[in-house]
Amino acid sequence: MTEQKVKVVNRAGIHARPSAILVQNTKNFKSSIFFQKGSTKINAKSIMGIITLGAGYGSEITIYADGEDEEQAVEILVKLFESKFEEE
Image 1 (cartoon, one colour):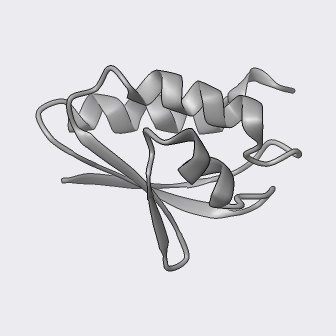
Image 2 (cartoon, helix red, strand yellow):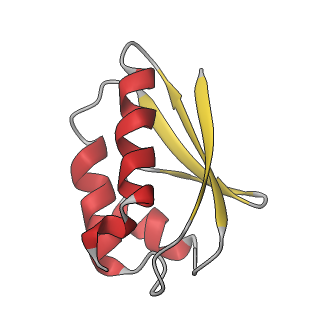
């Protein structure tokens, strides 16, 4: 299992557009991928799960991936968070 903590750095937080981008980038990975914020852990391949996570600006999220392409999955997702989902 690979895990990495990230911080939501885009001002609008994780709303519909970033959620769709995240799901689009996770769906092709064979690994199981999850996001955790506090005690809430959701499937990162579920747009509704991501939206209901309520990750606003400054939130800390842990990305978990388990499977044959777990390291690549986490790397791609970390880059998306760091790039502010190309919103700013």
